Length: 240
Image (cartoon, rainbow, N blue to C red; front, side, top):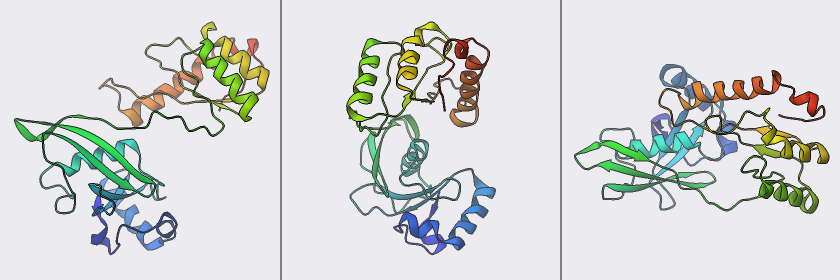
Protein backbone atom coordinates (compact mmCIF):
# COMPACT_ATOMS: atom_id res chain seq x y z
CA UNK A 1 0.00 0.00 0.00
CA UNK A 2 1.09 3.56 -0.62
CA UNK A 3 -0.45 7.00 -0.33
CA UNK A 4 -1.77 8.62 -3.48
CA UNK A 5 -0.29 11.94 -2.39
CA UNK A 6 3.21 10.43 -2.29
CA UNK A 7 3.12 9.93 -6.06
CA UNK A 8 1.30 13.15 -6.97
CA UNK A 9 -2.18 11.67 -7.37
CA UNK A 10 -5.44 12.35 -5.52
CA UNK A 11 -6.55 8.73 -5.20
CA UNK A 12 -9.98 9.60 -6.60
CA UNK A 13 -9.12 9.19 -10.28
CA UNK A 14 -11.44 6.96 -12.29
CA UNK A 15 -10.56 3.47 -13.49
CA UNK A 16 -10.14 4.75 -17.05
CA UNK A 17 -7.92 7.66 -15.97
CA UNK A 18 -5.57 5.42 -14.02
CA UNK A 19 -5.40 2.74 -16.70
CA UNK A 20 -4.40 5.45 -19.18
CA UNK A 21 -1.77 6.95 -16.84
CA UNK A 22 1.43 5.37 -18.19
CA UNK A 23 3.67 7.29 -15.78
CA UNK A 24 1.67 6.06 -12.80
CA UNK A 25 1.71 2.45 -14.02
CA UNK A 26 5.48 2.60 -14.53
CA UNK A 27 6.02 3.81 -10.97
CA UNK A 28 3.64 1.17 -9.61
CA UNK A 29 5.55 -1.53 -11.50
CA UNK A 30 8.80 -0.37 -9.87
CA UNK A 31 7.18 -0.54 -6.45
CA UNK A 32 5.58 -3.90 -7.19
CA UNK A 33 8.88 -5.49 -8.18
CA UNK A 34 10.58 -4.12 -5.06
CA UNK A 35 7.80 -4.59 -2.51
CA UNK A 36 5.03 -7.00 -3.40
CA UNK A 37 2.69 -8.74 -5.82
CA UNK A 38 -0.40 -6.50 -5.71
CA UNK A 39 -0.40 -2.79 -5.04
CA UNK A 40 -3.12 -0.61 -3.51
CA UNK A 41 -3.15 3.18 -3.59
CA UNK A 42 -4.87 4.81 -0.59
CA UNK A 43 -6.32 8.19 0.26
CA UNK A 44 -8.72 9.74 2.75
CA UNK A 45 -12.33 8.49 2.58
CA UNK A 46 -14.91 10.54 0.70
CA UNK A 47 -18.17 8.71 1.33
CA UNK A 48 -18.30 8.08 5.07
CA UNK A 49 -15.97 5.08 5.02
CA UNK A 50 -12.64 4.45 6.74
CA UNK A 51 -10.28 4.71 3.76
CA UNK A 52 -10.43 5.17 -0.01
CA UNK A 53 -8.59 2.69 -2.25
CA UNK A 54 -7.49 2.03 -5.83
CA UNK A 55 -6.09 -1.47 -6.42
CA UNK A 56 -3.86 -2.70 -9.25
CA UNK A 57 -3.51 -6.33 -10.45
CA UNK A 58 -0.68 -6.08 -11.27
CA UNK A 59 -0.83 -2.83 -13.29
CA UNK A 60 -4.46 -2.79 -14.41
CA UNK A 61 -6.82 -0.90 -12.13
CA UNK A 62 -9.35 -3.13 -10.32
CA UNK A 63 -12.98 -2.01 -10.76
CA UNK A 64 -13.47 -2.60 -7.03
CA UNK A 65 -11.05 -4.32 -4.59
CA UNK A 66 -10.20 -7.98 -4.00
CA UNK A 67 -11.22 -9.70 -0.78
CA UNK A 68 -7.64 -10.27 0.42
CA UNK A 69 -6.68 -6.70 -0.42
CA UNK A 70 -9.70 -5.44 1.54
CA UNK A 71 -8.67 -7.44 4.62
CA UNK A 72 -5.09 -6.20 4.26
CA UNK A 73 -6.24 -2.58 4.06
CA UNK A 74 -8.62 -3.04 7.00
CA UNK A 75 -5.86 -4.57 9.13
CA UNK A 76 -3.44 -1.79 8.26
CA UNK A 77 -5.99 0.77 9.43
CA UNK A 78 -5.78 -0.49 13.04
CA UNK A 79 -1.99 -0.90 13.22
CA UNK A 80 0.03 1.93 14.70
CA UNK A 81 2.63 3.31 12.33
CA UNK A 82 1.17 1.83 9.16
CA UNK A 83 0.91 3.83 5.94
CA UNK A 84 -2.79 4.43 6.67
CA UNK A 85 -2.04 6.40 9.84
CA UNK A 86 -3.26 9.98 9.64
CA UNK A 87 -5.77 9.41 6.84
CA UNK A 88 -7.84 6.40 7.94
CA UNK A 89 -11.00 6.97 9.98
CA UNK A 90 -11.08 4.13 12.52
CA UNK A 91 -14.10 3.49 14.81
CA UNK A 92 -13.49 3.04 18.55
CA UNK A 93 -13.77 -0.22 20.47
CA UNK A 94 -12.15 -3.66 20.34
CA UNK A 95 -14.54 -4.88 17.63
CA UNK A 96 -14.27 -2.60 14.62
CA UNK A 97 -15.81 -2.60 11.15
CA UNK A 98 -13.53 -0.93 8.65
CA UNK A 99 -15.33 0.41 5.58
CA UNK A 100 -12.98 0.19 2.61
CA UNK A 101 -14.11 2.53 -0.16
CA UNK A 102 -13.40 1.54 -3.79
CA UNK A 103 -14.61 2.73 -7.23
CA UNK A 104 -17.71 0.50 -7.19
CA UNK A 105 -18.78 1.13 -3.60
CA UNK A 106 -17.38 -0.17 -0.32
CA UNK A 107 -16.24 -3.39 1.37
CA UNK A 108 -16.93 -3.85 5.09
CA UNK A 109 -14.18 -5.63 7.03
CA UNK A 110 -15.07 -6.55 10.66
CA UNK A 111 -11.97 -6.92 12.86
CA UNK A 112 -11.58 -8.22 16.40
CA UNK A 113 -8.69 -6.63 18.29
CA UNK A 114 -6.80 -8.35 21.10
CA UNK A 115 -7.76 -6.47 24.31
CA UNK A 116 -4.30 -7.19 25.74
CA UNK A 117 -2.43 -6.12 22.62
CA UNK A 118 -4.06 -3.55 20.33
CA UNK A 119 -1.51 -4.39 17.63
CA UNK A 120 -2.76 -7.96 17.38
CA UNK A 121 -5.79 -8.66 15.18
CA UNK A 122 -7.52 -11.80 16.50
CA UNK A 123 -9.90 -12.25 13.59
CA UNK A 124 -10.97 -10.64 10.33
CA UNK A 125 -14.08 -11.22 8.24
CA UNK A 126 -15.89 -9.85 5.21
CA UNK A 127 -19.49 -8.70 4.99
CA UNK A 128 -21.25 -9.65 1.75
CA UNK A 129 -24.82 -9.54 0.60
CA UNK A 130 -26.66 -12.87 0.52
CA UNK A 131 -28.79 -11.69 -2.39
CA UNK A 132 -28.03 -13.46 -5.67
CA UNK A 133 -27.67 -11.17 -8.66
CA UNK A 134 -28.14 -13.32 -11.74
CA UNK A 135 -26.14 -12.72 -14.91
CA UNK A 136 -26.56 -15.95 -16.81
CA UNK A 137 -25.01 -18.08 -14.07
CA UNK A 138 -26.60 -20.62 -11.72
CA UNK A 139 -25.50 -20.87 -8.07
CA UNK A 140 -25.28 -24.67 -8.24
CA UNK A 141 -25.05 -25.41 -4.52
CA UNK A 142 -24.87 -29.00 -3.20
CA UNK A 143 -23.69 -31.49 -5.81
CA UNK A 144 -26.44 -33.53 -7.42
CA UNK A 145 -29.18 -32.05 -5.25
CA UNK A 146 -32.72 -31.73 -6.56
CA UNK A 147 -32.75 -28.09 -5.50
CA UNK A 148 -29.69 -27.40 -7.67
CA UNK A 149 -31.20 -29.17 -10.67
CA UNK A 150 -34.53 -27.36 -10.34
CA UNK A 151 -32.77 -23.99 -10.16
CA UNK A 152 -30.68 -24.80 -13.23
CA UNK A 153 -33.80 -25.84 -15.20
CA UNK A 154 -35.60 -22.67 -14.19
CA UNK A 155 -32.73 -20.37 -15.17
CA UNK A 156 -32.18 -22.07 -18.52
CA UNK A 157 -35.85 -22.15 -19.51
CA UNK A 158 -37.01 -18.83 -18.04
CA UNK A 159 -33.92 -16.62 -18.19
CA UNK A 160 -31.86 -18.08 -21.04
CA UNK A 161 -28.99 -19.14 -18.81
CA UNK A 162 -25.85 -20.10 -20.79
CA UNK A 163 -23.49 -21.55 -18.15
CA UNK A 164 -22.93 -22.39 -14.49
CA UNK A 165 -20.28 -21.84 -11.84
CA UNK A 166 -19.33 -25.25 -10.40
CA UNK A 167 -17.83 -24.87 -6.93
CA UNK A 168 -16.45 -28.19 -5.56
CA UNK A 169 -14.85 -28.39 -2.12
CA UNK A 170 -11.96 -30.85 -2.28
CA UNK A 171 -11.86 -31.31 1.50
CA UNK A 172 -15.43 -32.60 1.85
CA UNK A 173 -17.09 -33.29 -1.53
CA UNK A 174 -16.44 -36.34 -3.74
CA UNK A 175 -14.15 -36.01 -6.80
CA UNK A 176 -15.64 -34.47 -9.92
CA UNK A 177 -15.60 -37.90 -11.57
CA UNK A 178 -17.89 -39.37 -8.87
CA UNK A 179 -21.42 -40.42 -9.81
CA UNK A 180 -22.81 -38.00 -7.23
CA UNK A 181 -22.18 -35.23 -9.79
CA UNK A 182 -23.86 -37.10 -12.67
CA UNK A 183 -27.37 -35.60 -12.28
CA UNK A 184 -25.84 -32.17 -12.75
CA UNK A 185 -23.71 -33.29 -15.71
CA UNK A 186 -26.76 -34.85 -17.35
CA UNK A 187 -28.56 -31.51 -17.26
CA UNK A 188 -25.49 -29.67 -18.54
CA UNK A 189 -25.32 -32.00 -21.53
CA UNK A 190 -29.08 -31.85 -22.08
CA UNK A 191 -29.06 -28.05 -22.24
CA UNK A 192 -25.61 -27.81 -23.87
CA UNK A 193 -24.21 -25.45 -21.25
CA UNK A 194 -20.65 -25.40 -19.84
CA UNK A 195 -19.51 -25.09 -16.24
CA UNK A 196 -16.68 -22.90 -14.98
CA UNK A 197 -14.89 -24.81 -12.21
CA UNK A 198 -14.11 -22.37 -9.41
CA UNK A 199 -12.38 -23.83 -6.37
CA UNK A 200 -12.90 -22.61 -2.83
CA UNK A 201 -10.18 -21.25 -0.61
CA UNK A 202 -8.56 -23.14 2.25
CA UNK A 203 -8.62 -22.70 6.02
CA UNK A 204 -5.56 -24.95 6.32
CA UNK A 205 -2.58 -22.82 7.40
CA UNK A 206 -0.28 -25.08 5.35
CA UNK A 207 -1.82 -23.81 2.11
CA UNK A 208 -1.44 -20.18 1.10
CA UNK A 209 -4.72 -19.19 -0.53
CA UNK A 210 -3.40 -18.01 -3.90
CA UNK A 211 0.13 -19.34 -4.30
CA UNK A 212 -0.56 -22.86 -3.04
CA UNK A 213 -4.18 -23.82 -2.53
CA UNK A 214 -5.75 -22.39 -5.68
CA UNK A 215 -3.04 -23.81 -7.93
CA UNK A 216 -3.17 -27.22 -6.27
CA UNK A 217 -6.97 -27.30 -6.19
CA UNK A 218 -7.25 -26.42 -9.89
CA UNK A 219 -4.74 -29.14 -10.75
CA UNK A 220 -6.66 -31.60 -8.56
CA UNK A 221 -9.91 -30.85 -10.40
CA UNK A 222 -8.19 -31.17 -13.79
CA UNK A 223 -6.61 -34.53 -12.91
CA UNK A 224 -9.90 -35.90 -11.53
CA UNK A 225 -11.48 -35.31 -14.94
CA UNK A 226 -8.43 -36.38 -16.96
CA UNK A 227 -7.76 -39.70 -15.21
CA UNK A 228 -11.35 -40.93 -15.01
CA UNK A 229 -13.99 -42.19 -17.46
CA UNK A 230 -15.98 -38.98 -17.04
CA UNK A 231 -15.75 -37.94 -20.71
CA UNK A 232 -16.51 -41.46 -21.86
CA UNK A 233 -19.76 -41.22 -19.92
CA UNK A 234 -20.36 -37.62 -21.03
CA UNK A 235 -18.45 -37.03 -24.28
CA UNK A 236 -20.05 -33.63 -24.89
CA UNK A 237 -19.61 -32.33 -21.33
CA UNK A 238 -17.88 -28.95 -21.30
CA UNK A 239 -15.79 -27.24 -18.59
CA UNK A 240 -13.92 -23.96 -18.65
